[in-house]
Image 1 (cartoon, rainbow, N blue to C red):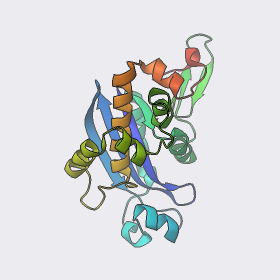
Image 2: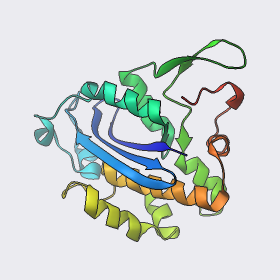
Image 3: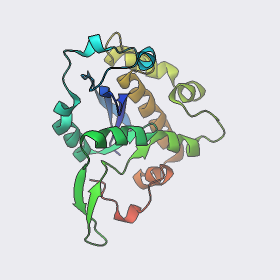
Image 4: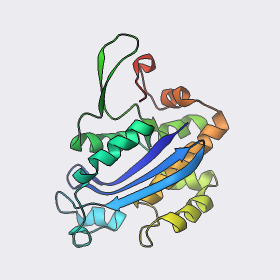
Length: 208
């Protein structure tokens, strides 16, 4: 099962100001990517306190729009996943409203994709590991014993000043580790993960 775990820093006002992608192949992390982007609007002091990014740091960064072809190639090679996937989905669709247009096998109808169907690692973890209360990434990595392995990956692949929580690639690594553990514990296939993610109409979903 191949998927790409995505995390964005930013919001609908500022746009995507940092992105991280962790590509998983055959149950393992295979590749990581990350980048900074120029904001569409000034970053608020409150947001800067959370993710540590300020306008002055991003003035020479490329616009996120320049990465459209790369994200379309990624989606063509595997499903997208995210922790609380509606956030990443809404940001992607704010830039590129149509992820893909496919023909549904069962009806022959044209289906407009929202870059999905999306695997939501937070929803999956709620069903795989019940009773944890707080399903934030920081709590999950602690409760599930993943903090050390996430930090080890971060030291290897994250930029030196972006290897902590609320940095896009770090959070994507954490979410990927959570989802991989869920898969090992439950043995769910891709449709099982999508059902746990709250995806309906799976019979008409075009996965690629």
